[in-house]
Image 1 (cartoon, helix red, strand yellow):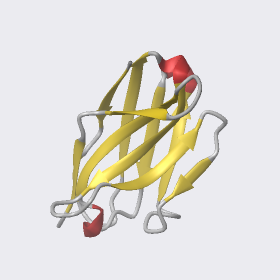
Image 2 (spheres, helix red, strand yellow):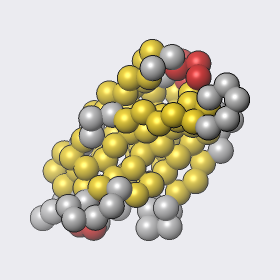
Image 3 (cartoon, helix red, strand yellow):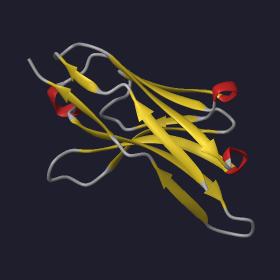
Length: 120
């Protein structure tokens, strides 16, 4: 089992910045990748950014060049630095951790979510 606790959401004006943090605990040695997803009202949850245990990253096209995902293995923490925020970035942001099963398949774990609101 993996537990995830997010922090760092809030209200910010367009063009502003926020940094989200997600601390993992439990069976962290099993984590293969971590990421951030978001869900806006009336929309499906979508991947924002992800980072593997090897440090490879990928981003949604809508956030490339504005958001940066990083991880501090010593602190079991993954970050999402969000710059040049737009109103369309408004959503609940969820931290995700994926662990691989011994033979095949994987398990996803989720944080409780943190609200990000971009508005003037």
